[in-house]
Image (cartoon, rainbow, N blue to C red; front, side, top):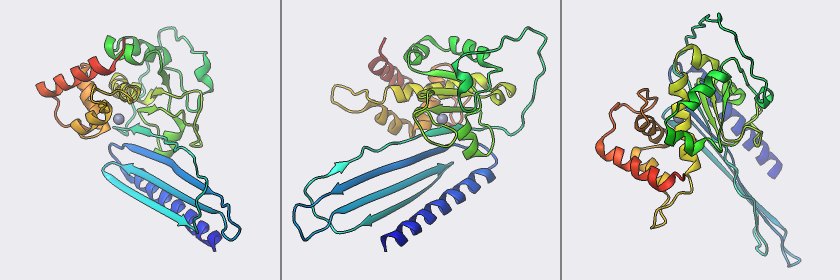
Amino acid sequence: MSGKLTVTIVILIVLFISLSYIYVINNPIEISIQANIGSTETSITSSSTTTTSSSTTTTIQLTTTSSSTTTTIPTTTTSSTTTSTTTTIPRTTTTIEVLEKEDSVAFNSDNSENIKIYEGEFISFDGFEGENQFNLDTLVANLPLELRKSVENNVIFVNGCHSYAATILGRCPFGVWDSAGTFADGSTNSNWKLSVWVSNKAFANNRAYNTLLHETSHALSYLTRNCVNSEGENQRKKAQEFFGSEELFADALVLYYGGDYLYYRDDLILQVSEREYLENYASLCIKD
Ligand SMILES: [Zn+2]
């Protein structure tokens, strides 16, 4: 009976992923995908009495957000419960954020200079392109000092078309922030944990610096995720609430660090109160 239930759940999940995928493919304009996969908590219970059997509680939650639509399918299977020992496997969360602004790609031919070819370890990364790796390095070097200092010891900057993001999206994104190091098949813990990706497509569309600034803002946000004030309040969570979301927080950081191209925020001007908020955030959460 539980076998049948499991099969039903698997079919529901596959159906849901298929529908989300089709939705993403058909969405023509700007797309942001946050895929939280594998929020799994398993409690394994064994019994000390002879009459009761062991019990397992499995909760699978899959959340996909495309643009402003959120769909959540929680499924819960519960059988008889006898508690003596409980093992909890900590949740694993993969967050991939994909930026796609325009479909048109202009291939500029300006190859009169000598082109240096990148030959480092990024070559083995899923989706690495490399033609603009040195250009990207130059853009990173030109990031505002405070922003660059806050991420440069932890984050790597890869010129490429992130494979898993491209698979979800159905085409190459401009930029990706990948905290988990996600392989082409969606599994994590690769060598490109904490990576910012900027694709050749972003360079071809003159969006490389804007994309870099936005994704690096996510990196700053992520790296300060444990920052608390004297009251013990998590500053990143408060900032996401203050600006409205992680995306709007990132766009506000873009403005704060001198950018002028926004992906989610409507207002191109940072209000005085918002600037002060970010000043306080930076002084509290960015360590020299
Ligand atoms: Zn973003």
